[in-house]
Length: 114
Length: 112
Image (cartoon, rainbow over all chains, first blue to last red; front, side, top):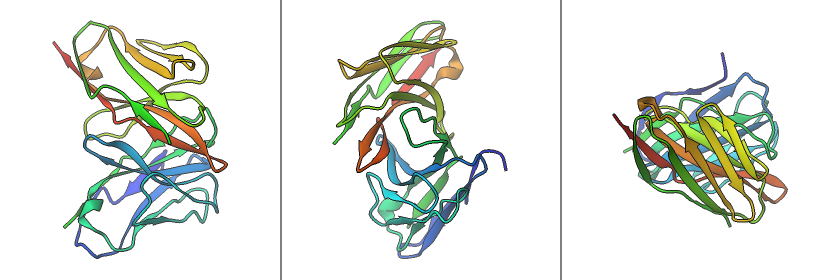
């Protein structure tokens, strides 16, 4: 693995189903983030984690949950998917959560909820 | 709360210079960053300004004025490959954590 990976690349999901988007980084970064990107709305933060074992809510957390059991992995779970969760999801990581904070993004997961 | 404003679209011709502005409102301020995103791709980091002034990286420069809550990204000698979306981003301190916030993005279209 080089950098940050996400799986699956794309997914079509029936409404009401549970879905986990996976994110793994091999840079030993402390901070990780989940964003959703919708046309015209830019990147909106869903949840974040400043270090393993801690998580926090971002701008649009409702309907999503995360866990950070270790440094490398930061899965995002949709407990019961709804059509409004159709979006492109990006995972990102950074070495620190402080001021200077270059974020490295994964390739994204395109999710369609029908 | 916090918000960032940037133009939705900018067009320019190859070889020209273009400036993409970003104004922000935050309860705290911990630097302004810029990211580039090509269609279908992931955002990639371009620059960071923590202090006032100009930061130059090759054809790209970024400027910050904290007193005006304003920054811009300057792209010189435009190339077709510069056609992409550009996002400004700030970090706000909330509840003891640094929360990143992105603007809605500026679509740059470079014409031959």
